[in-house]
Image (cartoon, rainbow, N blue to C red; front, top):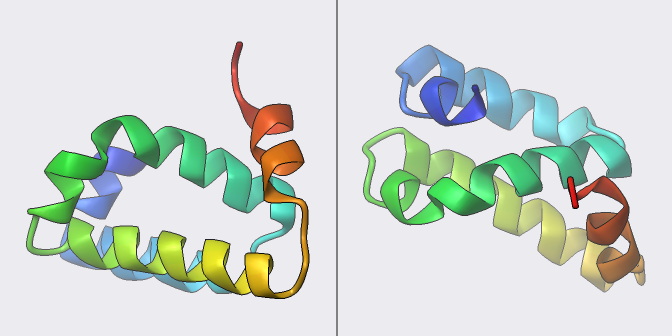
Length: 78
């Protein structure tokens, strides 16, 4: 679902805004859903902004010392 919203101008902005206020669990869920479509979204006129925002959030969490590996494992659908 996020893939389709990311490729839309308004959907992309909405997702970016929500990521700024998202919990760690929500960020992990978005990351897991975006990851399989990253290549497509990186080349999309609006999707690339979502990818940039996701990467920015991950980087900021990493700098803050958060354990991202544990976060992403706990939100994956294995």
